[in-house]
Amino acid sequence: IVVSALYMAIPVGIVGKAFSDVWHDRKKLLMIYRTRNRFLERGYKPQDIPAMFCRFDEDSSGQLDLPEFIAMMHLMQVTLGTDRLVELFLSLDSDGSGGIDDAEFVRTLFPSAHERIYGSRRVTEGTTGDEVALGLASLGGSPSGCR
Image 1 (cartoon, rainbow, N blue to C red):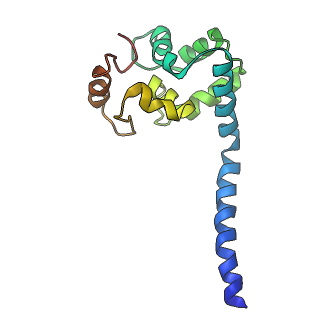
Image 2: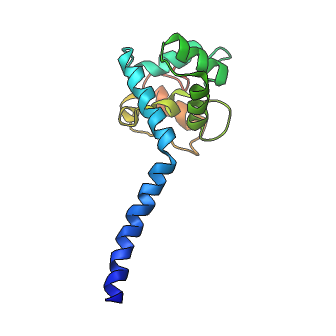
Image 3: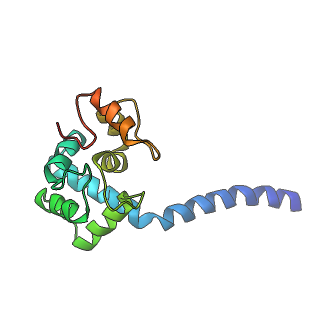
């Protein structure tokens, strides 16, 4: 009886841990879901993101900093409060660099479109800028989406 109780505790523990993880990330997950929906409702497509980032990248760094990101989202009429935009930006800036590039944005909001837009060579953490440039050059683009 004791052994069967322990066998039942293992799956319950696994499910409980998974639920706990999702519950902990619920705010971020809901914000990403709402952003994706608002983005699509406004008629934008994942393929539009590299050109948008190019247009709003005022310092030509290949990344949007927080003010550039907020300006882009407001002009695109993706209606989220400024506090939520800051939270979204911080969750997208996984490396803490203070900027997000178009590939990070697409990978987070539209993971299934990432490969279609950036090719089979996935951009992952630890990928060098030269590797990204090489992968995008084969598609006729540049790391920032600018031509």
